[in-house]
Image (cartoon, rainbow, N blue to C red; front, side, top):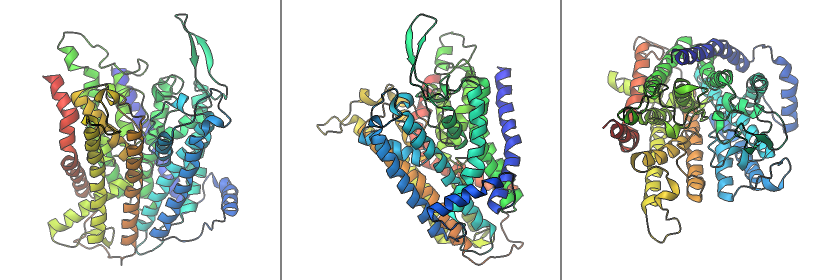
Length: 572
Protein backbone atom coordinates (compact mmCIF):
# COMPACT_ATOMS: atom_id res chain seq x y z
CA UNK A 1 0.00 0.00 0.00
CA UNK A 2 2.93 2.33 0.68
CA UNK A 3 4.03 1.87 -2.93
CA UNK A 4 0.55 2.85 -4.18
CA UNK A 5 0.53 5.99 -2.03
CA UNK A 6 3.99 6.86 -3.30
CA UNK A 7 2.73 6.52 -6.85
CA UNK A 8 -0.09 8.99 -6.15
CA UNK A 9 2.28 11.55 -4.62
CA UNK A 10 4.79 11.20 -7.45
CA UNK A 11 2.04 11.62 -10.04
CA UNK A 12 0.84 14.89 -8.51
CA UNK A 13 4.35 16.30 -8.03
CA UNK A 14 5.25 15.38 -11.60
CA UNK A 15 2.18 17.26 -12.78
CA UNK A 16 3.24 20.39 -10.89
CA UNK A 17 6.78 20.09 -12.26
CA UNK A 18 5.43 20.23 -15.81
CA UNK A 19 2.46 22.56 -15.23
CA UNK A 20 4.44 25.55 -13.93
CA UNK A 21 6.66 26.08 -17.00
CA UNK A 22 3.72 25.16 -19.23
CA UNK A 23 1.70 27.93 -17.57
CA UNK A 24 4.47 30.42 -18.34
CA UNK A 25 4.55 29.21 -21.95
CA UNK A 26 0.74 29.50 -22.28
CA UNK A 27 0.87 33.10 -21.06
CA UNK A 28 3.53 33.88 -23.67
CA UNK A 29 1.38 32.35 -26.42
CA UNK A 30 -1.61 34.57 -25.64
CA UNK A 31 0.51 37.67 -25.10
CA UNK A 32 1.92 37.21 -28.58
CA UNK A 33 5.52 36.74 -27.36
CA UNK A 34 8.04 34.66 -29.24
CA UNK A 35 7.82 30.92 -28.53
CA UNK A 36 9.32 27.69 -29.85
CA UNK A 37 6.17 26.97 -31.85
CA UNK A 38 6.14 30.19 -33.86
CA UNK A 39 6.65 28.02 -36.94
CA UNK A 40 2.92 27.27 -36.69
CA UNK A 41 2.26 30.87 -37.71
CA UNK A 42 1.96 30.21 -41.48
CA UNK A 43 -0.55 27.42 -40.84
CA UNK A 44 -2.61 29.71 -38.62
CA UNK A 45 -2.58 32.50 -41.20
CA UNK A 46 -3.62 30.01 -43.88
CA UNK A 47 -6.59 28.93 -41.75
CA UNK A 48 -7.62 32.54 -41.19
CA UNK A 49 -7.31 33.31 -44.89
CA UNK A 50 -9.42 30.43 -46.19
CA UNK A 51 -12.05 31.04 -43.47
CA UNK A 52 -12.22 34.78 -44.13
CA UNK A 53 -11.28 35.64 -40.55
CA UNK A 54 -9.61 38.84 -39.43
CA UNK A 55 -7.60 37.70 -36.38
CA UNK A 56 -6.78 41.31 -35.40
CA UNK A 57 -10.41 42.35 -34.98
CA UNK A 58 -11.25 43.39 -31.44
CA UNK A 59 -14.34 41.81 -29.88
CA UNK A 60 -16.59 42.97 -27.08
CA UNK A 61 -17.95 40.33 -24.73
CA UNK A 62 -21.14 40.08 -26.79
CA UNK A 63 -19.24 39.66 -30.07
CA UNK A 64 -16.96 37.09 -28.46
CA UNK A 65 -19.89 35.00 -27.23
CA UNK A 66 -21.69 35.33 -30.57
CA UNK A 67 -18.69 33.91 -32.43
CA UNK A 68 -18.31 31.07 -29.90
CA UNK A 69 -21.97 30.07 -29.89
CA UNK A 70 -22.35 30.28 -33.67
CA UNK A 71 -19.49 27.92 -34.46
CA UNK A 72 -20.64 25.54 -31.71
CA UNK A 73 -24.06 25.33 -33.35
CA UNK A 74 -22.45 24.38 -36.67
CA UNK A 75 -20.38 21.68 -34.97
CA UNK A 76 -23.53 20.25 -33.40
CA UNK A 77 -25.25 19.94 -36.79
CA UNK A 78 -22.14 18.31 -38.28
CA UNK A 79 -21.90 15.79 -35.44
CA UNK A 80 -25.63 15.04 -35.44
CA UNK A 81 -25.67 14.15 -39.15
CA UNK A 82 -22.63 11.85 -38.98
CA UNK A 83 -23.79 9.97 -35.89
CA UNK A 84 -27.25 9.52 -37.37
CA UNK A 85 -25.90 7.91 -40.57
CA UNK A 86 -22.60 6.39 -39.37
CA UNK A 87 -23.74 2.82 -40.14
CA UNK A 88 -23.92 3.63 -43.84
CA UNK A 89 -20.65 5.55 -44.02
CA UNK A 90 -17.10 4.20 -44.64
CA UNK A 91 -14.45 3.34 -42.02
CA UNK A 92 -16.75 0.87 -40.27
CA UNK A 93 -14.92 -2.47 -40.39
CA UNK A 94 -16.92 -3.91 -37.47
CA UNK A 95 -20.28 -3.05 -39.04
CA UNK A 96 -21.53 -0.92 -36.14
CA UNK A 97 -25.07 0.45 -36.67
CA UNK A 98 -26.21 4.07 -36.87
CA UNK A 99 -27.39 5.73 -33.68
CA UNK A 100 -31.07 6.28 -32.93
CA UNK A 101 -32.26 9.93 -33.11
CA UNK A 102 -32.43 10.36 -29.33
CA UNK A 103 -29.00 8.78 -28.81
CA UNK A 104 -27.64 10.92 -31.66
CA UNK A 105 -29.03 14.04 -29.94
CA UNK A 106 -27.41 13.08 -26.64
CA UNK A 107 -24.05 12.04 -28.09
CA UNK A 108 -23.64 15.05 -30.39
CA UNK A 109 -24.34 17.44 -27.52
CA UNK A 110 -22.20 15.44 -25.11
CA UNK A 111 -19.00 15.73 -27.14
CA UNK A 112 -19.78 19.27 -28.29
CA UNK A 113 -19.94 20.57 -24.72
CA UNK A 114 -16.85 18.70 -23.45
CA UNK A 115 -19.01 16.38 -21.32
CA UNK A 116 -18.40 13.15 -23.28
CA UNK A 117 -21.12 11.27 -21.49
CA UNK A 118 -21.57 8.00 -23.37
CA UNK A 119 -24.99 6.38 -23.34
CA UNK A 120 -23.50 3.93 -25.85
CA UNK A 121 -20.55 1.55 -25.48
CA UNK A 122 -17.49 3.03 -27.18
CA UNK A 123 -16.21 0.28 -29.48
CA UNK A 124 -19.65 -0.99 -30.46
CA UNK A 125 -21.60 2.27 -30.56
CA UNK A 126 -19.38 4.38 -32.83
CA UNK A 127 -17.41 3.72 -36.01
CA UNK A 128 -13.81 4.60 -36.79
CA UNK A 129 -15.12 7.50 -38.88
CA UNK A 130 -17.16 9.04 -36.08
CA UNK A 131 -14.55 8.20 -33.43
CA UNK A 132 -11.92 10.15 -35.37
CA UNK A 133 -13.70 12.83 -37.40
CA UNK A 134 -16.47 13.64 -34.93
CA UNK A 135 -15.48 12.61 -31.42
CA UNK A 136 -11.75 13.33 -31.60
CA UNK A 137 -12.41 16.54 -33.55
CA UNK A 138 -14.92 17.75 -30.96
CA UNK A 139 -12.56 16.86 -28.14
CA UNK A 140 -10.02 19.28 -29.59
CA UNK A 141 -12.42 22.13 -30.36
CA UNK A 142 -14.48 21.85 -27.15
CA UNK A 143 -11.33 22.05 -25.02
CA UNK A 144 -10.05 24.98 -27.09
CA UNK A 145 -13.41 26.71 -26.70
CA UNK A 146 -13.24 26.52 -22.91
CA UNK A 147 -9.67 27.83 -22.83
CA UNK A 148 -10.49 30.63 -25.27
CA UNK A 149 -13.37 31.76 -23.04
CA UNK A 150 -11.04 31.83 -20.04
CA UNK A 151 -8.54 33.97 -21.97
CA UNK A 152 -11.40 36.40 -22.73
CA UNK A 153 -12.01 36.65 -18.98
CA UNK A 154 -8.30 37.23 -18.36
CA UNK A 155 -8.24 39.97 -21.00
CA UNK A 156 -10.98 41.73 -19.07
CA UNK A 157 -9.02 41.44 -15.83
CA UNK A 158 -5.72 42.52 -17.37
CA UNK A 159 -6.81 45.92 -18.66
CA UNK A 160 -7.88 48.86 -16.52
CA UNK A 161 -10.77 49.83 -18.79
CA UNK A 162 -11.58 48.11 -22.07
CA UNK A 163 -14.32 46.70 -24.25
CA UNK A 164 -11.92 44.31 -26.00
CA UNK A 165 -11.86 40.76 -24.65
CA UNK A 166 -9.73 39.50 -27.52
CA UNK A 167 -10.46 37.79 -30.80
CA UNK A 168 -12.16 34.42 -30.32
CA UNK A 169 -10.89 32.96 -33.61
CA UNK A 170 -7.27 33.86 -32.98
CA UNK A 171 -7.26 32.59 -29.38
CA UNK A 172 -9.14 29.43 -30.33
CA UNK A 173 -6.80 28.57 -33.22
CA UNK A 174 -3.61 29.19 -31.24
CA UNK A 175 -4.93 27.02 -28.43
CA UNK A 176 -5.10 24.05 -30.80
CA UNK A 177 -1.97 24.63 -32.88
CA UNK A 178 0.41 25.71 -30.10
CA UNK A 179 -0.87 23.94 -26.99
CA UNK A 180 -3.24 21.01 -27.45
CA UNK A 181 -1.96 19.45 -30.67
CA UNK A 182 1.79 19.41 -29.84
CA UNK A 183 1.28 17.92 -26.37
CA UNK A 184 -1.19 15.34 -27.72
CA UNK A 185 1.36 14.12 -30.25
CA UNK A 186 3.79 13.35 -27.41
CA UNK A 187 1.13 11.60 -25.31
CA UNK A 188 -0.18 9.57 -28.25
CA UNK A 189 3.31 8.34 -29.17
CA UNK A 190 3.98 7.25 -25.58
CA UNK A 191 0.64 5.43 -25.45
CA UNK A 192 1.33 3.69 -28.75
CA UNK A 193 4.71 2.44 -27.59
CA UNK A 194 3.07 0.99 -24.48
CA UNK A 195 0.47 -1.01 -26.35
CA UNK A 196 -2.45 1.28 -27.16
CA UNK A 197 -3.62 0.32 -30.69
CA UNK A 198 -3.20 2.58 -33.71
CA UNK A 199 -4.36 0.13 -36.39
CA UNK A 200 -7.36 0.73 -38.66
CA UNK A 201 -8.10 -3.01 -38.83
CA UNK A 202 -11.35 -4.39 -37.45
CA UNK A 203 -11.80 -6.85 -34.59
CA UNK A 204 -9.07 -9.37 -33.96
CA UNK A 205 -9.67 -13.01 -33.05
CA UNK A 206 -7.91 -14.01 -29.84
CA UNK A 207 -7.72 -17.38 -28.08
CA UNK A 208 -7.59 -16.92 -24.31
CA UNK A 209 -5.57 -18.99 -21.84
CA UNK A 210 -8.77 -20.87 -21.06
CA UNK A 211 -9.09 -21.81 -24.72
CA UNK A 212 -12.03 -19.51 -25.48
CA UNK A 213 -12.15 -17.72 -28.82
CA UNK A 214 -13.14 -14.06 -28.48
CA UNK A 215 -13.35 -11.03 -30.76
CA UNK A 216 -11.31 -8.08 -29.49
CA UNK A 217 -12.08 -4.58 -30.76
CA UNK A 218 -9.22 -2.27 -31.62
CA UNK A 219 -8.70 0.76 -33.87
CA UNK A 220 -6.62 3.97 -34.07
CA UNK A 221 -7.25 4.80 -30.42
CA UNK A 222 -3.99 6.37 -29.18
CA UNK A 223 -4.58 9.86 -30.58
CA UNK A 224 -8.13 10.04 -29.31
CA UNK A 225 -7.12 8.86 -25.84
CA UNK A 226 -4.43 11.55 -25.71
CA UNK A 227 -6.81 14.46 -26.32
CA UNK A 228 -9.58 12.90 -24.22
CA UNK A 229 -7.35 13.38 -21.18
CA UNK A 230 -5.41 16.50 -22.09
CA UNK A 231 -8.64 18.29 -23.06
CA UNK A 232 -10.44 17.00 -19.93
CA UNK A 233 -12.97 15.34 -22.23
CA UNK A 234 -13.13 11.77 -20.93
CA UNK A 235 -15.03 9.83 -23.57
CA UNK A 236 -13.48 6.40 -24.08
CA UNK A 237 -12.63 4.63 -27.32
CA UNK A 238 -13.67 1.47 -25.49
CA UNK A 239 -16.75 1.07 -23.34
CA UNK A 240 -14.70 0.28 -20.22
CA UNK A 241 -12.80 3.55 -20.74
CA UNK A 242 -9.37 3.70 -19.08
CA UNK A 243 -10.05 0.49 -17.17
CA UNK A 244 -9.62 -1.25 -20.56
CA UNK A 245 -6.14 -2.79 -20.99
CA UNK A 246 -5.81 -1.43 -24.53
CA UNK A 247 -6.77 2.10 -23.49
CA UNK A 248 -4.64 2.09 -20.34
CA UNK A 249 -2.15 -0.80 -20.65
CA UNK A 250 0.02 -0.44 -17.54
CA UNK A 251 0.94 1.67 -14.53
CA UNK A 252 3.09 4.00 -16.65
CA UNK A 253 0.17 4.85 -18.91
CA UNK A 254 -2.01 5.25 -15.82
CA UNK A 255 0.39 7.93 -14.53
CA UNK A 256 0.67 9.44 -18.02
CA UNK A 257 -3.11 9.77 -18.36
CA UNK A 258 -3.42 11.14 -14.83
CA UNK A 259 -0.80 13.81 -15.52
CA UNK A 260 -2.42 14.61 -18.87
CA UNK A 261 -5.84 15.34 -17.39
CA UNK A 262 -4.43 17.44 -14.54
CA UNK A 263 -1.93 19.32 -16.67
CA UNK A 264 -3.94 22.01 -18.49
CA UNK A 265 -6.28 22.92 -15.57
CA UNK A 266 -3.31 23.47 -13.22
CA UNK A 267 -1.15 25.14 -15.88
CA UNK A 268 -3.94 27.62 -16.63
CA UNK A 269 -3.89 28.74 -12.98
CA UNK A 270 -0.21 29.61 -13.26
CA UNK A 271 -0.80 31.12 -16.71
CA UNK A 272 -3.39 33.40 -15.11
CA UNK A 273 -0.74 34.85 -12.81
CA UNK A 274 1.79 35.39 -15.59
CA UNK A 275 -0.74 36.74 -18.08
CA UNK A 276 -2.41 39.40 -15.90
CA UNK A 277 0.75 39.93 -13.83
CA UNK A 278 -0.87 38.86 -10.56
CA UNK A 279 1.16 35.85 -9.54
CA UNK A 280 0.14 36.00 -5.90
CA UNK A 281 -3.54 35.80 -6.86
CA UNK A 282 -2.74 32.70 -8.94
CA UNK A 283 -0.92 31.09 -6.02
CA UNK A 284 -3.84 31.79 -3.67
CA UNK A 285 -6.23 30.33 -6.25
CA UNK A 286 -4.04 27.24 -6.61
CA UNK A 287 -3.89 26.84 -2.81
CA UNK A 288 -7.69 27.05 -2.45
CA UNK A 289 -8.27 24.53 -5.23
CA UNK A 290 -5.60 22.14 -3.94
CA UNK A 291 -6.98 22.21 -0.39
CA UNK A 292 -10.42 21.54 -1.83
CA UNK A 293 -9.06 18.59 -3.78
CA UNK A 294 -7.36 17.14 -0.69
CA UNK A 295 -10.58 17.47 1.34
CA UNK A 296 -12.21 15.16 -1.20
CA UNK A 297 -9.24 12.93 -1.98
CA UNK A 298 -8.09 11.94 1.53
CA UNK A 299 -11.45 10.50 2.73
CA UNK A 300 -11.83 8.68 -0.59
CA UNK A 301 -8.42 7.03 -0.39
CA UNK A 302 -8.90 6.07 3.25
CA UNK A 303 -12.29 4.45 2.68
CA UNK A 304 -11.18 2.57 -0.45
CA UNK A 305 -7.99 1.28 1.17
CA UNK A 306 -9.85 0.06 4.28
CA UNK A 307 -12.48 -1.81 2.29
CA UNK A 308 -16.20 -2.37 2.67
CA UNK A 309 -17.34 -2.12 6.32
CA UNK A 310 -20.27 -4.46 5.65
CA UNK A 311 -17.81 -7.17 4.54
CA UNK A 312 -15.49 -6.40 7.45
CA UNK A 313 -18.32 -7.05 9.93
CA UNK A 314 -18.59 -10.57 8.49
CA UNK A 315 -15.02 -11.20 9.57
CA UNK A 316 -13.69 -11.37 6.00
CA UNK A 317 -10.24 -9.84 5.56
CA UNK A 318 -9.71 -7.29 2.77
CA UNK A 319 -5.92 -6.98 2.52
CA UNK A 320 -6.11 -5.15 -0.82
CA UNK A 321 -8.95 -2.82 0.22
CA UNK A 322 -12.22 -2.36 -1.66
CA UNK A 323 -11.27 -4.04 -4.93
CA UNK A 324 -14.72 -4.74 -6.39
CA UNK A 325 -14.98 -2.82 -9.66
CA UNK A 326 -11.26 -1.97 -9.70
CA UNK A 327 -8.26 -3.10 -11.71
CA UNK A 328 -5.63 -5.18 -9.90
CA UNK A 329 -3.06 -3.38 -12.08
CA UNK A 330 -3.77 -0.10 -10.26
CA UNK A 331 -5.20 -0.93 -6.84
CA UNK A 332 -7.57 1.08 -4.62
CA UNK A 333 -5.23 4.03 -3.93
CA UNK A 334 -4.52 4.90 -7.57
CA UNK A 335 -8.16 4.26 -8.47
CA UNK A 336 -9.35 6.54 -5.65
CA UNK A 337 -6.95 9.26 -6.80
CA UNK A 338 -8.20 8.94 -10.37
CA UNK A 339 -11.87 9.00 -9.30
CA UNK A 340 -11.46 12.32 -7.49
CA UNK A 341 -9.27 13.95 -10.12
CA UNK A 342 -11.59 12.94 -12.93
CA UNK A 343 -14.64 14.37 -11.10
CA UNK A 344 -13.15 17.65 -9.86
CA UNK A 345 -11.68 18.57 -13.25
CA UNK A 346 -14.64 17.35 -15.33
CA UNK A 347 -12.69 14.78 -17.31
CA UNK A 348 -15.04 11.93 -16.53
CA UNK A 349 -12.75 9.13 -17.69
CA UNK A 350 -12.48 6.19 -15.30
CA UNK A 351 -9.94 3.49 -14.46
CA UNK A 352 -12.41 1.84 -12.07
CA UNK A 353 -16.18 1.64 -11.90
CA UNK A 354 -17.55 4.50 -9.79
CA UNK A 355 -20.77 2.58 -9.20
CA UNK A 356 -18.66 0.13 -7.16
CA UNK A 357 -17.07 2.84 -5.00
CA UNK A 358 -17.78 2.97 -1.31
CA UNK A 359 -20.62 5.31 -0.29
CA UNK A 360 -18.23 7.91 1.13
CA UNK A 361 -16.21 7.84 -2.10
CA UNK A 362 -19.38 8.36 -4.12
CA UNK A 363 -20.21 11.33 -1.91
CA UNK A 364 -16.79 12.88 -2.56
CA UNK A 365 -17.13 12.30 -6.30
CA UNK A 366 -20.52 14.01 -6.32
CA UNK A 367 -19.23 16.96 -4.29
CA UNK A 368 -16.33 17.39 -6.70
CA UNK A 369 -18.76 17.77 -9.60
CA UNK A 370 -21.19 19.93 -7.63
CA UNK A 371 -18.44 22.42 -6.76
CA UNK A 372 -16.92 22.10 -10.25
CA UNK A 373 -14.23 24.66 -9.44
CA UNK A 374 -11.35 22.72 -7.86
CA UNK A 375 -9.07 22.94 -10.91
CA UNK A 376 -12.07 22.17 -13.14
CA UNK A 377 -12.02 21.51 -16.87
CA UNK A 378 -9.91 23.25 -19.49
CA UNK A 379 -10.61 26.93 -18.89
CA UNK A 380 -14.08 26.46 -17.44
CA UNK A 381 -12.76 25.45 -14.02
CA UNK A 382 -11.41 28.96 -13.43
CA UNK A 383 -14.58 30.43 -14.96
CA UNK A 384 -16.63 28.56 -12.34
CA UNK A 385 -14.21 29.64 -9.62
CA UNK A 386 -14.65 33.24 -10.79
CA UNK A 387 -18.36 33.02 -9.97
CA UNK A 388 -17.50 32.06 -6.38
CA UNK A 389 -15.00 34.94 -6.28
CA UNK A 390 -17.67 37.46 -7.30
CA UNK A 391 -20.04 36.14 -4.60
CA UNK A 392 -17.22 36.30 -2.02
CA UNK A 393 -16.38 39.87 -3.05
CA UNK A 394 -20.03 40.86 -2.68
CA UNK A 395 -20.35 39.29 0.77
CA UNK A 396 -17.07 40.85 1.89
CA UNK A 397 -18.29 44.26 0.73
CA UNK A 398 -21.45 43.88 2.78
CA UNK A 399 -19.39 42.90 5.83
CA UNK A 400 -17.16 45.98 5.71
CA UNK A 401 -19.92 48.36 4.58
CA UNK A 402 -18.47 49.56 1.27
CA UNK A 403 -19.13 48.96 -2.40
CA UNK A 404 -17.53 45.63 -3.42
CA UNK A 405 -14.52 45.94 -5.72
CA UNK A 406 -12.51 43.35 -7.60
CA UNK A 407 -9.23 44.21 -9.31
CA UNK A 408 -10.08 47.89 -9.62
CA UNK A 409 -13.71 47.63 -10.71
CA UNK A 410 -16.90 48.00 -8.72
CA UNK A 411 -19.01 44.86 -8.45
CA UNK A 412 -22.60 46.06 -8.57
CA UNK A 413 -26.07 44.51 -8.59
CA UNK A 414 -26.01 43.40 -12.22
CA UNK A 415 -22.84 41.34 -11.84
CA UNK A 416 -23.98 39.79 -8.56
CA UNK A 417 -27.33 38.81 -10.08
CA UNK A 418 -25.57 37.03 -12.94
CA UNK A 419 -23.29 35.16 -10.50
CA UNK A 420 -26.26 34.18 -8.32
CA UNK A 421 -28.24 33.04 -11.35
CA UNK A 422 -25.42 30.77 -12.54
CA UNK A 423 -25.01 29.28 -9.06
CA UNK A 424 -28.72 28.68 -8.53
CA UNK A 425 -29.17 27.30 -12.04
CA UNK A 426 -26.76 24.42 -11.41
CA UNK A 427 -28.62 23.41 -8.26
CA UNK A 428 -31.96 23.70 -10.06
CA UNK A 429 -30.84 21.51 -12.96
CA UNK A 430 -29.39 18.77 -10.76
CA UNK A 431 -32.16 18.61 -8.17
CA UNK A 432 -35.01 19.39 -10.53
CA UNK A 433 -34.18 16.76 -13.12
CA UNK A 434 -33.33 14.17 -10.43
CA UNK A 435 -36.77 14.77 -8.93
CA UNK A 436 -38.32 14.39 -12.38
CA UNK A 437 -36.48 11.09 -12.89
CA UNK A 438 -37.74 9.83 -9.53
CA UNK A 439 -41.29 10.79 -10.43
CA UNK A 440 -41.12 9.08 -13.81
CA UNK A 441 -39.53 6.03 -12.22
CA UNK A 442 -42.23 5.42 -9.63
CA UNK A 443 -45.21 6.47 -11.76
CA UNK A 444 -47.21 3.37 -12.69
CA UNK A 445 -49.90 4.80 -14.94
CA UNK A 446 -50.65 4.21 -18.59
CA UNK A 447 -48.50 7.06 -19.83
CA UNK A 448 -46.01 6.06 -22.54
CA UNK A 449 -43.12 7.26 -20.43
CA UNK A 450 -44.03 5.16 -17.39
CA UNK A 451 -41.01 3.11 -16.32
CA UNK A 452 -40.61 0.19 -13.95
CA UNK A 453 -37.72 0.57 -11.47
CA UNK A 454 -36.04 -2.60 -12.75
CA UNK A 455 -35.79 -1.07 -16.24
CA UNK A 456 -33.49 1.71 -15.00
CA UNK A 457 -31.78 0.75 -11.78
CA UNK A 458 -29.72 -2.30 -10.94
CA UNK A 459 -29.57 -1.14 -7.31
CA UNK A 460 -32.47 -0.31 -4.97
CA UNK A 461 -32.93 2.27 -2.21
CA UNK A 462 -30.18 4.79 -1.45
CA UNK A 463 -27.72 3.67 -4.10
CA UNK A 464 -30.39 3.66 -6.79
CA UNK A 465 -31.20 7.28 -5.94
CA UNK A 466 -27.47 8.09 -6.02
CA UNK A 467 -27.25 6.66 -9.54
CA UNK A 468 -29.87 9.09 -10.80
CA UNK A 469 -28.43 12.01 -8.82
CA UNK A 470 -24.96 11.22 -10.16
CA UNK A 471 -26.21 11.18 -13.76
CA UNK A 472 -27.58 14.71 -13.67
CA UNK A 473 -24.71 15.99 -11.54
CA UNK A 474 -22.31 14.63 -14.14
CA UNK A 475 -24.19 16.09 -17.10
CA UNK A 476 -24.52 19.50 -15.43
CA UNK A 477 -20.80 19.56 -14.61
CA UNK A 478 -19.87 18.48 -18.16
CA UNK A 479 -18.13 15.53 -16.57
CA UNK A 480 -19.48 12.45 -18.31
CA UNK A 481 -18.66 9.77 -15.73
CA UNK A 482 -21.52 7.73 -14.34
CA UNK A 483 -22.77 5.23 -11.82
CA UNK A 484 -23.24 2.61 -14.49
CA UNK A 485 -25.82 0.66 -12.59
CA UNK A 486 -28.14 3.10 -14.34
CA UNK A 487 -29.54 1.96 -17.69
CA UNK A 488 -29.39 5.33 -19.45
CA UNK A 489 -29.72 4.58 -23.18
CA UNK A 490 -33.40 5.40 -23.59
CA UNK A 491 -35.43 8.38 -24.73
CA UNK A 492 -35.88 9.86 -21.25
CA UNK A 493 -32.21 9.89 -20.25
CA UNK A 494 -30.91 10.80 -23.71
CA UNK A 495 -33.19 13.82 -24.05
CA UNK A 496 -33.08 15.12 -20.48
CA UNK A 497 -29.34 14.53 -20.31
CA UNK A 498 -28.84 16.48 -23.52
CA UNK A 499 -30.86 19.43 -22.20
CA UNK A 500 -28.92 19.54 -18.94
CA UNK A 501 -25.60 19.30 -20.78
CA UNK A 502 -26.43 22.31 -22.98
CA UNK A 503 -27.52 24.51 -20.09
CA UNK A 504 -24.76 23.25 -17.80
CA UNK A 505 -22.10 24.10 -20.39
CA UNK A 506 -23.03 27.42 -21.92
CA UNK A 507 -24.70 29.39 -19.13
CA UNK A 508 -21.69 29.01 -16.77
CA UNK A 509 -19.53 30.25 -19.66
CA UNK A 510 -21.80 33.11 -20.72
CA UNK A 511 -22.19 34.35 -17.13
CA UNK A 512 -18.51 34.87 -16.23
CA UNK A 513 -17.67 36.40 -19.62
CA UNK A 514 -20.61 38.79 -19.30
CA UNK A 515 -19.44 39.77 -15.82
CA UNK A 516 -15.87 40.24 -17.05
CA UNK A 517 -17.06 42.37 -19.97
CA UNK A 518 -19.29 44.53 -17.77
CA UNK A 519 -16.56 45.06 -15.16
CA UNK A 520 -13.85 45.78 -17.72
CA UNK A 521 -16.00 48.51 -19.25
CA UNK A 522 -16.22 50.38 -15.93
CA UNK A 523 -13.92 53.12 -14.74
CA UNK A 524 -10.78 51.78 -13.07
CA UNK A 525 -10.51 52.52 -9.35
CA UNK A 526 -6.93 52.63 -7.97
CA UNK A 527 -6.23 50.55 -4.91
CA UNK A 528 -6.46 52.24 -1.52
CA UNK A 529 -6.19 51.25 2.13
CA UNK A 530 -9.81 50.10 2.02
CA UNK A 531 -9.42 47.95 -1.10
CA UNK A 532 -10.12 44.24 -0.69
CA UNK A 533 -6.89 42.39 -1.48
CA UNK A 534 -7.94 39.58 -3.83
CA UNK A 535 -4.51 37.97 -3.56
CA UNK A 536 -4.47 37.75 0.23
CA UNK A 537 -4.71 34.61 2.32
CA UNK A 538 -7.75 36.05 4.05
CA UNK A 539 -9.61 36.41 0.76
CA UNK A 540 -8.60 32.89 -0.24
CA UNK A 541 -10.14 31.56 2.97
CA UNK A 542 -13.23 33.66 2.30
CA UNK A 543 -13.67 32.13 -1.16
CA UNK A 544 -13.17 28.61 0.21
CA UNK A 545 -15.81 29.18 2.90
CA UNK A 546 -18.23 30.57 0.28
CA UNK A 547 -17.72 27.43 -1.82
CA UNK A 548 -18.45 25.19 1.17
CA UNK A 549 -21.54 27.14 2.27
CA UNK A 550 -23.06 27.46 -1.22
CA UNK A 551 -22.49 23.77 -1.94
CA UNK A 552 -23.85 22.63 1.42
CA UNK A 553 -26.97 24.78 1.20
CA UNK A 554 -27.64 23.72 -2.37
CA UNK A 555 -27.02 20.00 -2.23
CA UNK A 556 -27.23 18.62 1.30
CA UNK A 557 -30.84 17.33 0.98
CA UNK A 558 -30.26 15.10 -2.10
CA UNK A 559 -26.90 13.95 -0.76
CA UNK A 560 -28.56 12.98 2.50
CA UNK A 561 -31.07 10.85 0.58
CA UNK A 562 -28.34 9.12 -1.43
CA UNK A 563 -24.68 8.56 -0.50
CA UNK A 564 -24.92 9.82 3.10
CA UNK A 565 -27.83 7.49 3.90
CA UNK A 566 -26.01 4.63 2.16
CA UNK A 567 -22.87 5.32 4.21
CA UNK A 568 -24.71 5.07 7.51
CA UNK A 569 -26.60 1.97 6.36
CA UNK A 570 -23.25 0.25 5.72
CA UNK A 571 -21.94 1.33 9.12
CA UNK A 572 -25.09 0.22 10.95
